[in-house]
Image 1 (tube, one colour):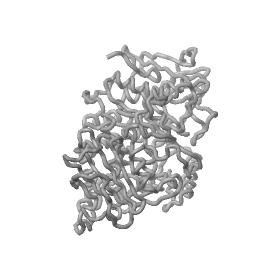
Image 2 (cartoon, helix red, strand yellow):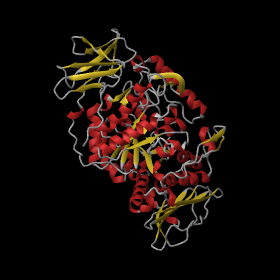
Image 3 (tube, one colour):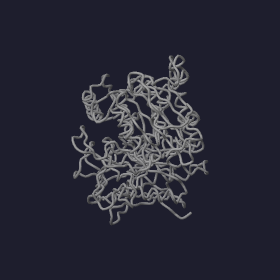
Image 4 (cartoon, helix red, strand yellow):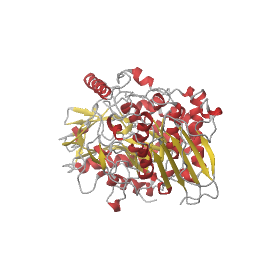
Length: 614
């Protein structure tokens, strides 16, 4: 294998002994290394022409704590710190990435269409809230049919409670979760279990507390404004070093931690008007290094632009990103099930919107948006289904769009079953939010543990204003209160009791059928047809596969029983019925699976040998 990428900045343990320290700090006149060994030693560093400072200390090794002192007066953590054991304001610690003994040597990743993603927050997924505590739960997830977990951001953030989107040390796994060693143990265990790892990373902003990047270099610019203030400087003076910092970070997670995919947070807030967009450069470098390592690894974007260039290949003037979250799928299904019309949901609510999201990717593909008061989006009809990650719940939509309430608190069990069926039979990559598979009832609210009182007060006020804006049914919980965090923890015992075990049975059966039928697992939206009717609100979807396998899904979103004309002729065998008593419908035994569809029901049929999709 040819020599590939390696991290050249931060503190690197040398093969011959000692540690090389290297930091890009063009705004510093002088820089010194302060060794946190009680003696307070400060060693001057040599400055190069591009503003990089270097120093080799022969007597140091892994485990040493250190800081950089800017201009002789400001001790600061390393911007490329691999570990911040004392938090965002404390010293950095030298880590030797080669010291970890990986055991899953034969793991090479998954095809994108084989991903069934399970999004989780490390701190609330288990009572312990650590990387290590996730490991014993992997067999249950794998048995369910999950093939990948997606971790909300783990870069070091202030305090011990946070979603992770306030991270400031982008290379340092959160210490309260278990730090670098804990994250490596989790990823290794996932690969041993046949589970891929998707890591949520944030390159559109940096959290406010503990953010010292601007003291080192021109990391931020006032040329653009993001929802979090000044934007990351990807195209202004000094931006070459900033771009390298971010692209290195992506390659770092791939190389040193062996992650299988990155989910890029809110790429619509990444501003770059240079000749080559940083997203295209990052994705190209990520793919090249994955290929060198002999692995399949992916880049997934979160974008509200409905801009096909995000996922279009480079040869078609796109960024080449492998997939993106499908907001339109979520919004269409959520609005149809709940009747919610606030904010961006006002653009949805028709059953036809679900049909469009399933078959064409973007619902808003250049048509007028009432919410935006302008035309929105471009067509993605020619993009393969595997390029869209679909969900009915995620951390953001629960906490921000639904005031912390999960779908189980908003709709009937029957409608929950319909949502699950549409999700897991769509020609896309499905994603579950932790606890969804058994109907978890705990809210998922926004929580923080900022140590700056003024910042904590500002966050508290901002969240209250957000709740008032969408007329929440709940009072806004205090993000800083430990109880807000504790209430979001999963209650794993619910899985064993009705009605939760019935929900779990449905998810398990749907995922089993997805594995058993190529037509459900192939992500072939080009072999998918859908029809819908607004009155009496039904949807019929036919999935096909080149080998001839076929599946038909008929779902009712109406309030009254109604017949659903099957979109395809032929002989069909009933494979799943959401009104089955096994899934918790107490009236199921009194109804026939061939009767008109009741309010909020779905049926899944498998095609026999004489049925072939056109």
